[in-house]
Amino acid sequence: MICPRLSRPLLIISLLMVLVLAAVFPAMSSAQVAGGAADSVSFNDLPRDELLSYPDWFNDPFLDLRADLEAAREAGKGLILYFGQKRCAYCHQLMDVNFGSETDIVEYSRRHFDVTPIDIWGVAEVTDLRGRTLTERGFALREQAEFTPTLIFYDEQGREVLRLRGYYPPYQFRAALEYVADQHYQRESFRDYLARGDNRMVFDAADLNDQPFFQPGPYNLDRSRLPAERPLAVFFEQGDCHPCDVLHGQSLQAQAIADGFAGFDSIQLNMWSGTPVITPAGQRTTARDWASELGLFYAPAIIFFDEQGREILRVDSVVGFYRLRNVLNYITSKAYLQEPSYQRWRAQRGF
Image (cartoon, rainbow, N blue to C red):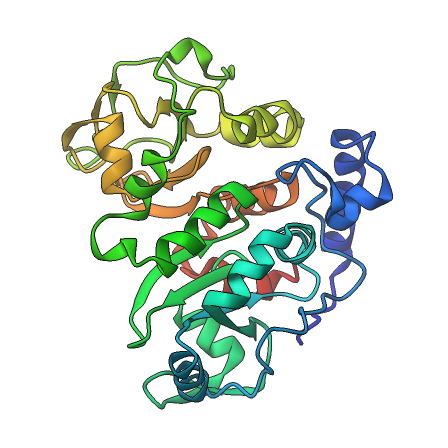
């Protein structure tokens, strides 16, 4: 595992983040910080002091994925590749909550899947499903595991059928397991599958949380003909959305985060509404159809575009102050122009 030494300025930044997080989460107990909170979307997302331990039912990391797939196939199961970090708060949340206290998820996962862990900073060799050998770190970079945990689901033939980027609460995670195990991917997208069982969709824009940096409609986001002066952040949200409430009530209340978004053209869309939109590429559509085209199924999701309308990065899973602050730093500093991989940039910066 790579543990880069922080320079003095970065160390100061890290300490400031700790102080800000303490203000954002003033009433958190130590148990909640460790990931045991009943509210699975509200937790301190600073890197953990303790190292992550995998459940004993995960595959031993021999890292021959062809052998892992064959063993899963013989057992009538699918294969999940888990990309994570030992100190990642979101990875701890996955292990402590979804694969910990949610016993039905554990039982269902063990019955239908084998799980192979990959350390995104690891230097051990891994043989991929095509027989090519590379390091865990190189494999994670190739698979664009930008946010941890990233889980890639494969069917018995070794075809990728679903990818989860980041941490998802038990509701969406349970649905993802069922979506793959019951082979719904052969008939519909995960977004459509999840929406069929989701009775929380609310179309009234008045139910959305407002922010002073959100720009009002009409939403002509076309940057294909004339570049904009600032990058664009599009918030896809929905009504009656607890994770949206947490984002607005916690991370977006931090002055550093609010100031960061003030430097963007920031807009908010109800991802299930028929609100007219002209996309950054100049396409006329609606918020609902654009969200579908983008494959979004989780709210809130934030997609960042550059001045020419090209997508830079998306955050479409649970996100807290620490991760969101790093993303804003990456984009506002224009680091993506020299380093397109957010994961590699983080490694270089020591975050």
